[in-house]
Image (cartoon, rainbow, N blue to C red; front, side):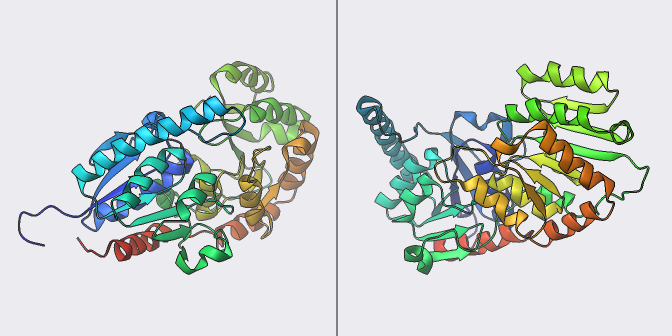
Length: 369
């Protein structure tokens, strides 16, 4: 590269939720460390997750979810996607990226379509065990596919698929260095509960009730950290205060990886980022997949940890205070169970996934900084 020339630009495209942005952030950090420039294309929901995203610029594009049923709504969605694609074409002509990397979510469609029309190499990364709908649309024309799980891509796409694993943020890599907290017969039991980047009301409805069913000796040892929506905070807080349980409740935790590392047990949903971070850090969990999803991706994600003994999978229809209290009692009364689950989860983690994905991006782009 000649003196004074700009480093090659990689444009990352991701939906504005943690599940899409966290792996994009991890890749961005590696690319920047290798001398690339990075910009981000996303949607308006991004504000909660940009604190440490190393993007030169953030570009917001209009997009919408493709839904059937209502012909008018479908037509309006296509119009929005068309406008977003036109704006993305103008953006890409201005930025001149050497590759565009999509991380899923419908906001990735316009820039990825634009890249295809402009003959710019494209890579999609799918973090779930089942490929998302937006990525399925893009996969047909993408240059390469990176997957978080070994068998995410269908047989017809295997020729251009690479299993990289799911990139984890630098904060997760730091947390992964922490050993699993020691458990003794009298030690504090740290319980961390969260429902993914958007929260989950079911956690606030079920977990406090389950805690009330535990015996007094177990309750006295608990230290609870729980993500809860604003409208659900007061009810959960009143229960924990009445039971005199140490607790910290908030709608959002910016330092969630550190809190996971301090946990003896995590209770949560099973989005791709959650499962990847639990495995990377090596913490046992009780996972409650989001029900009703067309692709059942969270069920597949949770199964990947449950099948190796790193997690307990409970479907939401079975997620009752009584069932949860029973599982907690079993886990807390046998000091060997939780450390064994932590070890099994850790064995599934891939700390180097961001490096592997960066290798693939550089190869597809055909350039080095």
